Length: 617
Image (cartoon, rainbow, N blue to C red; front, side, top):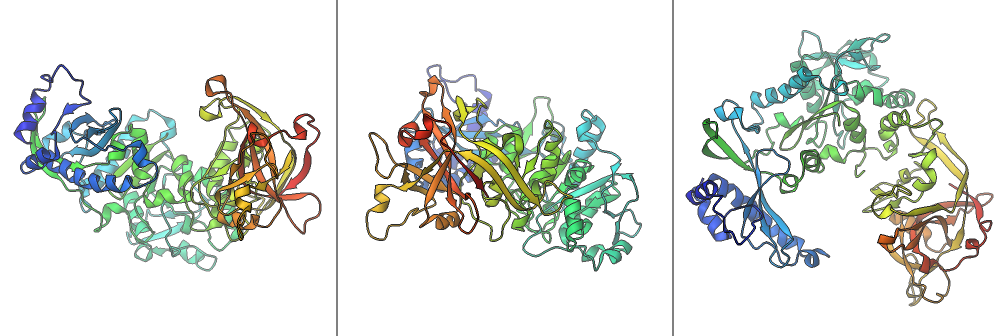
């Protein structure tokens, strides 16, 4: 630690009285920081972070909207602020040069001690080394300490009914395991593995090898991630491991459907979930054992605590994003970019498991009781959430029916979901057009009558659902894949016209883009009506809309409260008639909002009976 910094920390009560600093004053320029970094471990760590921050900031200012929001940038009069997530480190912050209320986090520093250092008694963080047995032992101690506390039954699963199949790892031969099918309600402790399959399918149980797998499997023939999970489970004294590719017969559709419908109980009854959070494939292994695991750059310095405990601390660069967030949000932010966090199946695995031991790219996390994810197989979208849906269904009032990702009791309000970000359409049928499951990518929902945020105010339903039906691929899993679906609905239907600017100029097409294509509710605008912007569900939906007669089914009217200017708006879905189908059959193509002004006056507003009854598929 540099002498100026040491003096500053000792004399922090002697701050100028004519200013209120945002934290403990640190170096007041980059030049001062660089000079101190020569012989100060903390300053050296901050300097590395600042060197990374500066080009990132320069690139960010090129993005639309950033220059307007943060046009000045840091003034580089740095202060130290305690991290919100209380991990023993701190943030380095700086005020914006033009907007005094804008604070920049330019660096985040974590502090840790070695396992055998006296300061380990007062500092929570530990050095992580990929090959160190101390790191694994430390992680396993988290689980054992949780067992001892037993403050929440939700977190402690000892002996529970075993799944239909598990890997029996109790044998005396460490290189052999066997696929085991318990009889009756056999109880036991098992670990479940959550991982990314990767581009190629991992070692799997099929109808051909299932009997051979029951006799025994050579551990060394399994993918590295499986091997590591078995090793850790044995270290914990657990007798069984559940891995989906081995415990579900992958080429037996009936077995696959039956077992995926039981996912909720598999995860919720697991003693521990071992999560290969930072591993991009089943062959990568758990990051704790990886030789390629990026090692933090530690800068050591001598330290004496207020309890007169002397030792060595290590400063290292932490996440600027997570340092500014409370622990519950900080861990989520740190995990969100990990390979497993992008996987659709992992959503229910993480939320249903009582306890999860995450092996991340850079850190290990222990998480206990408490949708931008992709899937290896697009058809897995609904099955991947079936365990969560089954659990949630048990909490809902009866009768409530699950309908391709929606619930019957809230179906009308859920129909106004809207695609956001980058979305695509699956190549094969997966769900009816009115379900969010019919697209890949993120989407947003509105919450009529929730009283939250922009959804505050009065919501009036303008449509009525008369009947709805989905055809399940397997009757054994009412929360899984569907092969067809329709709903019988009455709603105001109005034509959607391209805006004048979309019709002018030879060769213009409507819609000319997925998001932001300009449309209007009358062929000719009347009075103060203005065009509005459409949002089609995917680029494929945009292409399917071209050249067709488009309509909007207006489902809800929303009037915001007085403090939000009491502006009325309408939520509608863009639909088009399905050719070749008998009757009044439409499909959903997108979503569009209207202000009361832009919608104009419609006949059905004075006569609620002037609505159209049609089928939406």
